[in-house]
Length: 380
Image (cartoon, rainbow, N blue to C red):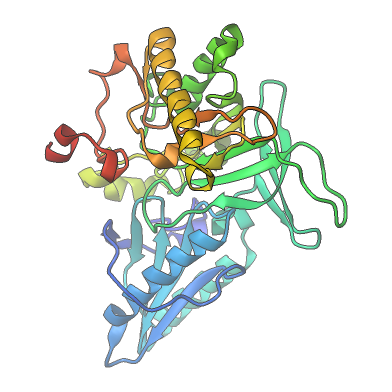
């Protein structure tokens, strides 16, 4: 079965383990900004079991430090035995044990390393839409729009993925103006990448943040009082990747926690309900409206003004759009620059739903920010 995104060279590998809860490890991770994959090696006495926790911990660091990673690879080695590990958005897949004390095991390991060395970068887990210009120190981000791709430029992520499994949310502040050598970027666009739980059929994806923001943006245009109180949709949607689909050849498909695997591996995992029910879809949204966190407010009067604006925004969006935000927290309220009258801004609509769809929404993760979740949600 193909462990590696439809590369036929990996037909000799089968999934040995599906891991959805990473083992704990408290050691500090090394510098990981330029690391392709972690190989954690232990002695034969310690074995692979001792290598796995550190492998998981360090791979978490890769997601945190590399803003262009969709997924990651790793390897745990204990004495003469090794396991290759594939880290998806909400799971890790470990291969069967490779024994290097016999010729077939050594051949399999060498084959794996060679395939890693010669395949395309997107098959190693890098996002082809995010390019890092290390010389000029900026990121070039290409996002699909109605009239074709739009290129944005950013100095880096202001929010980075902090967990090994989950949404892997990354946020950039960016501009459409290409910076020159030594030039600064004056950001006016907020770009959000994430892997939220979603349905495979986009037409019944009731919690789609992009769809909600498009509806809200049309309302803002007709209601000037909401200007600068919530973000305005610019472009984005589901991220597409090129994938070999059966006998149909290469096709553009949604980038999901399922489509990054081969059909053979998906068939192995179809009996696992955590894998089947926990589909995650890679999405990107570009929004107008860049704010600052509440901790930068200077006095109580500013706090009251900002919170009043957020409350008004929440109420008006419900009244005019029939959209329920469902994740109000201090992290999801910002304020605009003091260059003009200070205003509060309500953000992060990725848990929102339309009121008419609330009974149709079913998901398998507890959503919201823990200190601000309702009692019914916590007890349910």
